[in-house]
Structures are given as C-alpha cells and as structure tokens.
Image 1: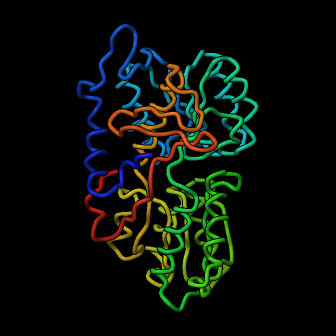
Image 2: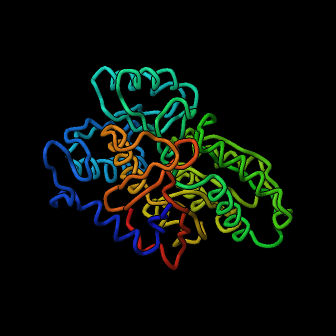
Image 3: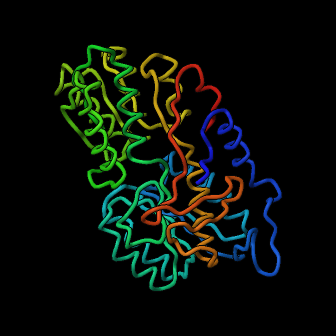
Length: 347
C-alpha cells in the first residue's frame, strides 16, 4: 500500500487546497450517472462524529469529508450528539437509516454500544465506515485508521520522554471518554512501550478522563497536579484534552516544570508551543482522514469494493489505497509538530 500524506510541508498545502475546494470546479467529472472513478452520483453521505462542535471533527468532517462528497457529486450532511457518551450516537444512526442514507461515516464513542444500530442500518442498505475510532469489525464495512496504535504509542512516549529528559519521573494520561476505542487501544500500547528498557525511568501513575469536554479536561488536568505533586509529564491523546491541559499549564506555576504532549492541531497548540508550555506534539491531518472516509464509503456504495483484504480504490487527490486486515484502511503515520515547523501549518 502506498502511504500518502506524510504531513510535512506538503500537508499544509494539501489542507489549503482542501479548504478551497468548495469554490473550485471538482477535478472528478460525472458522466452517465456516476461521479469520478465510477462513483455513483447523488450518494447520501452522512458524518456522525463523537460530538459536533468539536474542532477536530469540524476539520475532519466539514473540511475533509464534505469536500470529497462534493467532488464525487454526492449529498453531504453532518449530525451527532453535543456530548460524547457511549449511547448518544444510537438515535442518530437510527434516523440516518430511516432517511435512506447510503453511507454512514461514524467515529465511535464505544465499540459495543452502537453495534446493534449499525447492523440494522447495514441491513437497511447503508454502508458503514468508521473513522478515527472503530467499532467491532462485524459492525461496519470499513475502518479508516488515522495511524496504527503502535505508531501513535511510540510517538507519544518518545515525545514525553524527550521533553522530561533523562531523569524521567511520574507521568499521567488525560484521555477522552473511558470507553473510546481508539484512546484505549493507544493507552494499552503506550503501557507496552513504557515497559521497554529505554523508558524504565518513566512511571505511569494515573489515567483520567475529560470526556472530550474542554472544561472537564481543564479540571482533570488541574486535579492531576493537585493529586500528584511529583508529576513530571502529561500525555493527552485527544485534541480537546491536550489543548485544555495546555491552557491550564500555561497559566500556572507548573509551566515549564510539568511537560505536556499529546495529539492536537497546530492552530489549537500554537500558542502553547510558542510560550514554552509544550515542546512537541503529534497528529495526522484530520481533513485528510475525513476525505478518505468519504471516498472509501462511496467506493463501497458504488460497488467498486466490498471491503475484503486486498481491495483497491482511489481516494481523489490522496491517490490509491489498499484494504488491509480486518477491513482496515490506513491513512499514514503521525507527524510531530514543534517550534521550528508549526507555523507551516494552518488547521
């Protein structure tokens, strides 16, 4: 499989092109009732994020998925709960199914809670693509994985280790929801990474959950420092959490003493990198993730692929992808943002 979007300078250019695509003539043309590459025209594609009004999902859905849907001449929509909770997405899935939605792209708050609703939607004719956070494989047709759990874990532990320095110390994790599939997979892999000899001086002492809510994440970061006075670092593998923790640390006496890394967007984290609160953090391009999810769903709904291992499809400007094990498609590797490159990115 050809890896795409290394998220270096090209990612910034790619994002700019994506953001402007709504005002440009799509590169894919339609003919005989199909969009580019044999995609059916008029497909109803709905994005169901963990929560709406979340900057990360606003980028992935409205600046990625929407652009793709417009390129293959489909009908785009986004819907979802205002708070991330295990069962909050069920009613939205049921409604989308009743509306005859062709493709449901969902980032699961819980790998089990929405399975029944997704199975019913598939029986009714919808193709289900998970992105960012997966369900059980039998509950969907494809999972668009932003990066492997191993790759994310390695980057997170390396960044916090480098930030703290050779003396090591106690670290904690500020996660999203306790049931988030992707978060839990990353945390388990981070624990395995911490067991390696080179990280023997780092000790994971706590994991807390901010529920992808800004204020709660802020309070959890504050509580960690009150509870763990010897804490040397925090890893927050969620865009809401890492920004909230950065805001707390930057205005506290812990700034520069307690290190912070995680998964965030450049626009959220720029101020904290520039004021020294954060030395480095990582992420992929969320717009590309949503863009890929939309094209993958359209390929399924058009009968171009079935989701079996080895299937190949073209995702617009991102090029060709191959379906891997467990009906998974990999976007690429996470990229590290720091003071000497963060101004090259705008998302």
